[in-house]
Structure formats: structure tokens, C-alpha cells
Image 1 (cartoon, helix red, strand yellow):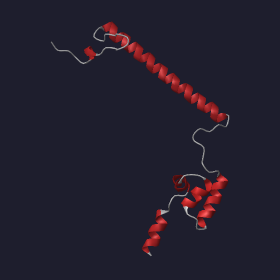
Image 2 (cartoon, rainbow, N blue to C red):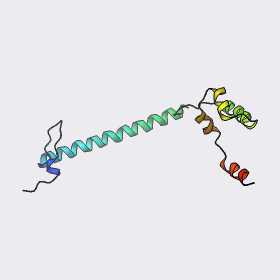
Image 3 (cartoon, rainbow, N blue to C red):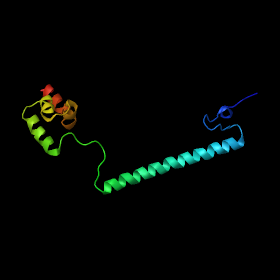
Image 4 (spheres, rainbow, N blue to C red):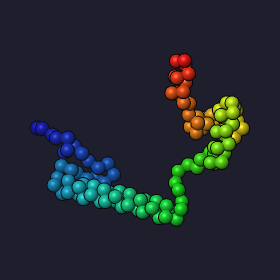
Length: 114
């Protein structure tokens, strides 16, 4: 007697026997309903995000430094202050300072070659 894997599939909570045609039909109907519900959730989410954007809301995490603070920090960095000093001054992480002001690798390479 050969048993296929599909014949061994049973729903643990609903006791759906997929070895019968009625069980397979019910399983497929439930699967189609679940897929439709998932697509509806995606549509509602996209519509909600679009409505929020039209009202001027922007998603995501807020910046740790305002644009004015970024400009000021850039000037301080160019005047010789370290990123660590600026991070302490503005109360942000050192990683944030490197995110805003990445190390220019090309400048380091060209200065090393001279």
C-alpha cells in the first residue's frame, strides 16, 4: 500500500481530511479565502499609507539631527572636530555621525598614495 504525502495532510484544528475529495475542496476554499483576506489587508494598508502621505505624514523613524544641526555639525567636522566629539555634543550615537558624514575613502587613498 502506497500512501502519498498529500493523503497524510490533516488540519490540526479543524480535522480536515485531505484524503477525500470533499476535504481537499474545503481545504482549497479555506486557502482561497485566506489568500483573499491577505490581499485585502495589503490593499487597505497601501490605501492608508497613501491617505497619510496626502495629509503630509511621512513614515519611518525621525532623523536624529535636524538639517540645521547637520549643517552646523558639518562645519564643526571640517574645522577639525572628531565625529566622536560631535556625537557627544549633539547627544547622538557615533554610528549616526558616520551615517550623516561617512568617511571619504577616496580622499584617504589619494592622501596615502602621495
